[in-house]
Length: 463
Ligand code: GBH
Image 1: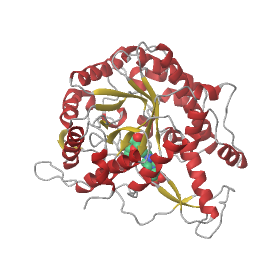
Image 2: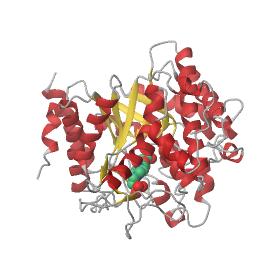
Image 3: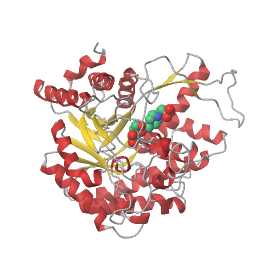
Image 4: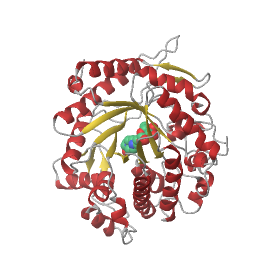
């Protein structure tokens, strides 16, 4: 049965932007070619126990050697946009110093191939692959990394700005900071909250510095922005402690980024909560004005929403370290293969709320998708009914949010193809195109065909 949300899809305008997304480390492979040096992910993958199955991105989808074939796949989907990321250690080995021409050439060829096929390139500068040398110099908790990022951004911008119109600085700084430096579930695998909070500020500062410099150097109109991962933080019950847990989750998950980006200030409640546990953001004079450098588009990545409880199983509101309890409570929604609950209404709610609280900032869904266990038939075809339904309900949720006033201009499916799913290795498949990792054969799944047909219908049915 069609979800309630899916009925809204045909209300999307013909001008709506449609795309597919990937990231460098997840698809490229070729980690030691043409002068690329290791990133924190190459290192992290080699720490026993960090990545399921001991997998790594050494080969991944071998996209580095199969790029023209992959661009043809994208073209056949009928999308207008391809969102990809640039590998920093490929372009600037070690994270400082001059450009590595051989590394940058790859993206130059990719951009040309996309344009030749009528596909608009949407370039993300940083999707988690920090050069290992910069981690050794302190990583994102160190202020210098922000300046290194801006320098790197300019190496790429100078070469590609004549052909690339849309630039995203960072993908999901929450993941880089919190999963990387507080929870240790992603590279570099540190567990120290004060470092993670310093990383938040330096990621934002790096974004602002890069944005200012790209804007100043642009020789034609560009669209600059950042991508945040967000969901709706829902109180588990009406109880005040649960509402407070949801407020804190939203504060650290969304507002700690949005408020400085849009209003040049950190949210007072978040600053106060951090102060209570002895942590402060390392803000220096002038930083907030840099972070709030105007952007043209906010990228939104949505996968799920969460219900929050402010008490643990014993009813306590503080843990042993005196930190307030914030516990995610599953609510019986169906889940994907990641165990993430399927909550399209949380997507609509998020977008409507962002439109209301941060007016005047156009949004594009830079990632949305789901992992399911795929069972290919003898020809390699995957009849991924659940993934297709997920797309239908979530694209419908976007259309519904638009109808309610949210300024959402486009939608990119995550992901073009199955790829290296970070700590989950190759076991989790998000692609609309199947990848057979033995043969590297790509086969569009049912969801890919549905996506192509949906785009075609929406483009044709409106004007
Ligand atoms: C994105 O991250 C990434 O940009 C992309 O590279 C990745 O492949 C894709 O999603 C799929 O994972 O961690 O249990 O609290 C999304 C990361 C996923 C982080 C949902 C927060 C909440 C569930 N987000 N997650 S949990």
